[in-house]
Image (cartoon, rainbow, N blue to C red):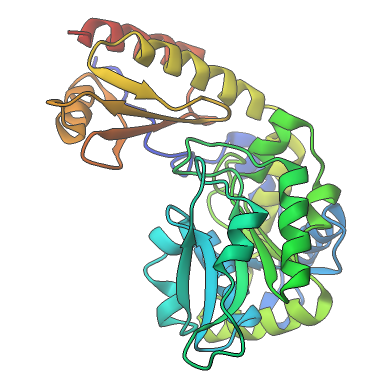
Length: 344
C-alpha cells in the first residue's frame, strides 16, 4: 500500500478534525445577513473583545477581509503603502487596484518587515495634486514570503506613531498572527491597540475549513458589512463555519508550537543538503529555502512529489514548505529521511 502524500504546500490544506466536525454539526444557526446567527455573533464578539475592539465581521476568506479593510479606509486614487511581497499586493488578484482604485507604494523590508522611517519616506506630499494621496499602511504578521518572520511590537508601535503623524490608517493582515504570538508571547490586546483594523484567518494554522474575521471600531465594521454584501460575502447559516472557528480558538492555538518545532526540523534537514544555498531563519511554521545555481525550484518540487511530499515553488530557485496540524512527527520523520536520501 502506497503511503499517503505529505502536503507541505500550505497550512490552508488542513481538514477539520473529528472534534471540529462535531462542533460544526451541533452549531446553532440563523441568517447572518440579518444578524441572527448566534454562533457567528459569538465568534465575532469573542474576537473583537480579545483584540480590544468594538466589533467584528466574519467573511469567507482573508483576501476578502483585507480587501474590505482597504475599501473602507481609502478612496479611489489613494495609495496603499506595503512591502513588495505582501499578500494584499501579490496574492489577492490585484484587488486593491480593481476593487478600491488604489495605487501601491512598496517600501524596503527585511523578510517582510519594514520600519517607521521607511513609511515616513514613502508618504507623498499632500499639497502636490499630481501625486497619489498616501492613505494606508498594511503590516503582515507573520510575513509569508519572509519565511514566517514575526514583527516586533515596539517596531510596529513606531509605525503607529508615524501613521498618526501623517494621517495614515494602519491595517494588520494577521493571517498567521496566532503563530507570531505563540513565539514572542505578545498578546491580542497589544496588537489590537496598534491598528484601526485587523484581519484574523481561521483556515491557516488554526485549521478551520474556511473563514476570516475583520476586527475594528463599530462604525468601521458597519461599513465593512456593507462592502462585504457588495462583494458577495454575505453568508446565511454561517454558524457552521463560525463553530469551526470557535473550536479552533479553544483547541488549536496552544498546539501551534508543535508546528514550529517540526518546521525547525525541516530547516535543519534542508541546511544539510548540498543543493540548498540558503534556508531563511525558521521562526514559525514556514520554511523557505533557496537552491544553488543550476537547480530549479520546479525540478526540486517534482522530485519531492515523486517521494510523496508536496511543497510549493515560489520563485525560480525558491521553495516553500509549511507545517500544520495535519503533519505530525511521523510525517516529519519521513520527510527528513527523503531529504537526506535526495542529497547530491
